[in-house]
Image 1 (cartoon, rainbow, N blue to C red):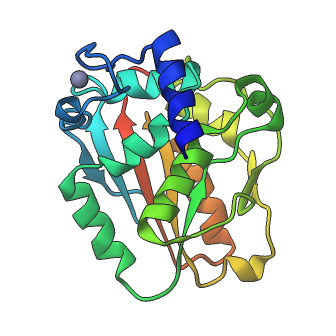
Image 2: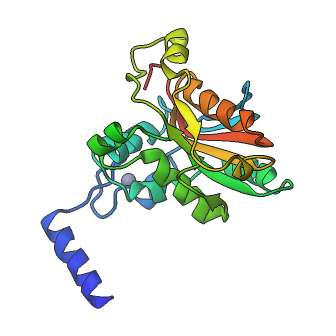
Length: 223
Ligand SMILES: [Zn+2]
């Protein structure tokens, strides 16, 4: 414990950490700025998804910056901050669903091994794990798997995204683990919702009772 602490202060001395919101030294997101991570946000209805809870808007609050640091600068510890500080209305919304009958599992959006090898981690996995810890949900990273590498969705319109993702996902566990169960699909960015819908479609096809999406930020200009 002591060693851990002194090692930490030694690292802090060498590489001081600054708040991504206000640049104050000490933490990646200080207590004051944690209140401004998520602004806006909404609940959407889906086609295969029963509901999608979007915690914040990309053009408001700190969510865009924090997700960028998390994904592209590999600051994995941000997953805890991002989940712990979900706004109260999101927690109430989640609680309403999770209190309903049946077991719930948190599920991440699978990433092709090639992309995962490039980035070193799947951001959706880390977020789904944090959610399962905080809400006591089951978690199995193999529930969904990605069959093939797909092009980046960034430059594609909705139609293009649908074609790009067609049959890209499959279940990675025995169908008995899906049938009649409830799933909370967790992802970082919502743009047109095609990825979430594809994944929800696969779960529903295998008999999932309900599938709710939880996304941290909504982007208007592509992800
Ligand atoms: Zn701050």
